[in-house]
Image (cartoon, rainbow, N blue to C red; front, side, top):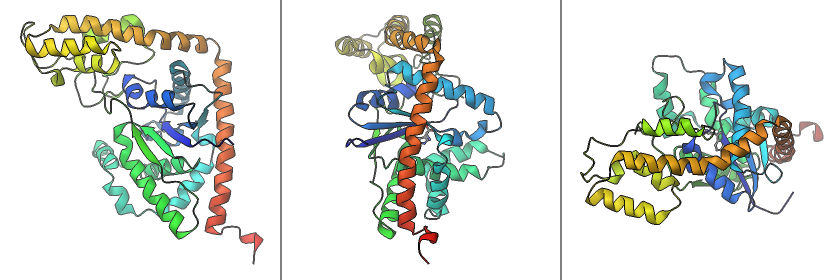
Length: 333
Ligand code: TRP
């Protein structure tokens, strides 16, 4: 084990990753991967409404791994962990759930929002487990830092509380992890709706080809109706928001914003620029993805090796937990 501090973050395997994932968290993972010892988790125990469609989960596991390789997360340096291959996650979840009052879970804003989505459908018991499981995920490698999208911060706050409680009541086992939100905390969808997401069908995927990107950008919502020579508010136009997020020519972005506010810029011009910017950005990612996709043996190795490493630290942590809880019944009597 190295002396570096540890990162844990994760993604649920519900499909390929999009620009929102990148701006919200992946970018930080890539940036910090050599500074920290990293555990990147594919959280398949937390598949929520896909639990009755495991073939789809399986496909998404590979998609996520390919996307990680594509954005440049080095699987030699960091660990790609499949959650259910480390069943200690389930064990720790169970123990921790004794120290987390239900009322506290029910007040968690992320959970509340998701709960509303169930509408009249019945809520599976596992739905209450999954936030505890996320706490267990973070505590398992005794992580110091958790780079995530903004919507995940309440879970990290909960993790800190559970860690504090556990350390105080039993033994000091867990660091209190910090959350870290990406440069763009939340990327709106191509339809201008609150959040880019698969289920809303408003996402641009890291694996989309150039023509698909062009088509999606052409169809983007460009703010309230406005003539080409009519000034507008940049904060109301998702095309400008995307340019702000992905255009590396900062001077040009500033000029565009200024021109937009003072004299107006047509959405057609903005869309042209955005198509170029996104395709320039995605090109190397697509290339790397294609290289790995034609050599799936490497992807498999990354997942296998990473999950083994995840299991090693999990066993170590569970020993500390068993010792702290005094569960080694057979050793004393
Ligand atoms: N809940 C996260 C999401 O939906 C994924 C996740 C699972 C996670 N376990 C985690 C994120 C632990 C950070 C830390 O995106």
